[in-house]
Length: 119
DNA sequence: GCCTTGACGAGAA
DNA sequence: GTTCTCGCCAAGG
Image (cartoon, rainbow, N blue to C red; front, side, top):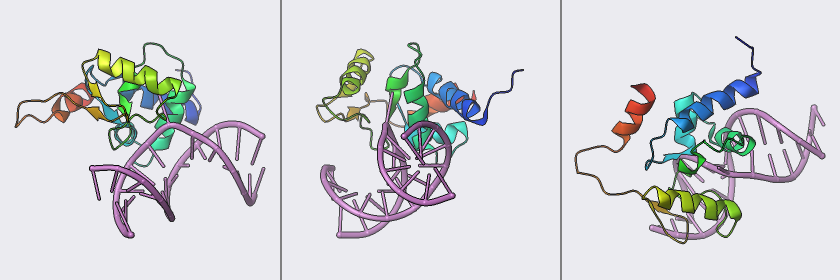
């Protein structure tokens, strides 16, 4: 196996988690970081997503901890992310806050995510 | 080496 | 509820 630099390995791990987010579900930068093994690495996730240029990567499913789009409203990225999220059935208001679709009570939305990541 | 910047987070006001 | 401030970690100048 090729030896990746520490920085590349971080990115690979982070991107693997992002790819595991199911359509219609979202995750915060900090949550992705924790799942990848970097409890305080929210900003590392942001950096990794900024570096990569993979069109197949569901980067739009990554939001801030307060469930808001990280880009400033009015920016190109903001519009793009909002468009993609809406295409997946999520509700996004003008301020960038994302509302998850309602689910049956008693079912934790995160169960799907955990299964996708851990099995 | 030090300082600044960034697709962030948690706690306080 | 929201807005502000400070703290974190890495990269780049």
